[in-house]
Image 1: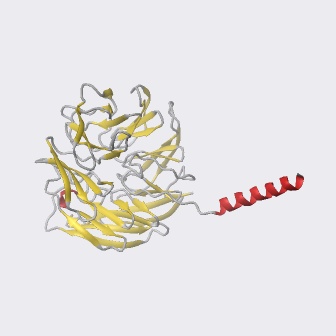
Image 2: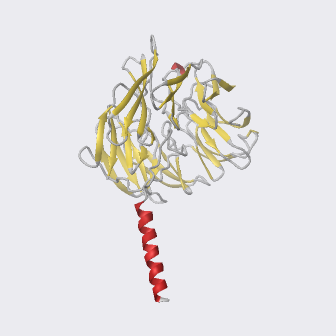
Image 3: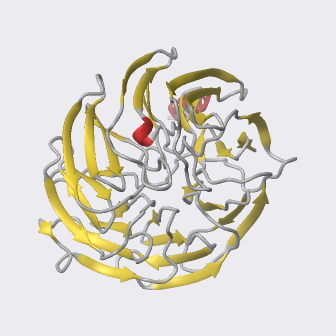
Length: 409
């Protein structure tokens, strides 16, 4: 019996060593706000503190101007950028291990480029990655699919205008469709393109005004929904057909930027400029649910640009002027509200048991999630930072106005 026990113990030790020796697969970050589209990462061992002289694995100059967030798959990081005059719209591939720029591909060449908001760029939507395909979107200036070899497989131009401020919302994938919000000043619609050809599969017009939000796909037992925030109203559509499921109205709110988040049977919607509110809407309704399915509303400290972050039962917001708020997601009750400083455009991140906020001034505030405010660190990088943080392979990736950083312990 002793021999059997010793044999079993040694066998368990060998199995454990074998398990520990297996390579750990790094999480990809294939779209705006990561795999779930809601700002959550599964990576561990991420840096808590950093500076220009601490925990920088590499720092690479990014040519041109763009505010798309990094999208990561395997050893490739994809970004978009534009020349200063906005006439050359480009896709960049950066090596995740070294920071070297591997590809710099002109996707569209324009004769002229419209003006953008001072905080925006001609290359603000984040690419979407799937397999060996890269889907890039430059708003009304063009949408395209490339492969990892740098070949352009298809291009299309969606006939709308970008509003006053330039391109904003990023595309999303659903099965064989690429779904894009196209909310300009003169007309507004949501469109689903065949991801293999770029041909329109469905298009759903709606009345409103300019908006710049990224849709969110929610997978539910009763049927999947694509939740699409627009000016004055948010819609949920059947992703395969574009058939409207429900809609909720919020008066004069427009120029919406934050991506919605979902949990506890609720989707959380920032209503935009002029009437900034946060709505918690139950997603099991049909038709106009404004009077029947709004669980609660917040009207103080609501963000105009950063997306909300849901962690467990708590919902976190940061306003554009740096006021962070923690709410009970189910009831809307405020747990705490704290000024963390700076101006904010980037959406917050939950990773490694922490919440990371990134200001436009390059300052990151890291807090512990919970019903009381607990600051863990404050970090500073050079230059403006409006793009959201990406996570992969035990590292944080931050795009500044001039550089892409890889931050690692």
